[in-house]
Image 1 (cartoon, rainbow, N blue to C red):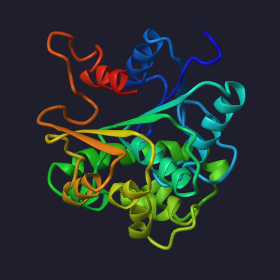
Image 2: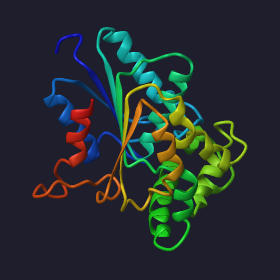
Image 3: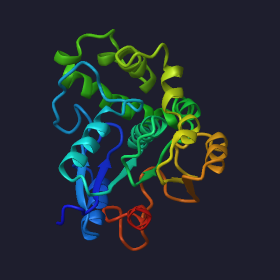
Image 4: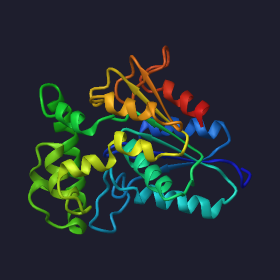
Length: 264
């Protein structure tokens, strides 16, 4: 590829990695378009070692910043493109807001798929009824992540081994290590309605009305209406990181793969 070919960095969701189908299909979309593709694994995920006691989280942009900076050093004439799914949308959104609010514009465009638009109401929904099924499954994976890295993280409270809900894990392992006073302050930091006014990079959010993680949308939609840099595609069907194409099947590419290829 030429040195000025776009560098496309794809970021997974919670407990995910470059091995997952959605990440692979997004990267395949970029490769067909002649992009230089990077499937980024957050610290401690998918076999990546954890080198410090600071675990990955939605409010920490350090891993994305390191990847973008490395790409810019190696390919200074290439535009940088970002895409993220689920928790990855929070990480990228946080990164864009931090960079843009300091007058830096290192990225040419971003697509954020299946972003829970209000983390407060999204997590509240996961604490009742059917949401508890998702909550329990995700928390089990978070406990597994902690057990894998306990020698590095250290014994922080007891939530790493006994957490029943995502919030337990966040309160014991994320809030303290990332300098927040509470889970609420942590959610507020990466909430789309707070960061969108700071984003100056062309950015597209893609969400589905039937996404069980979506949460309330009014405040985020109002922030997007007030932005000339951020757009929202709010479709009827698509679930959470699904958006299946008719006739393709559950293991094929998603409709959002075409969207990110066209937008970026």
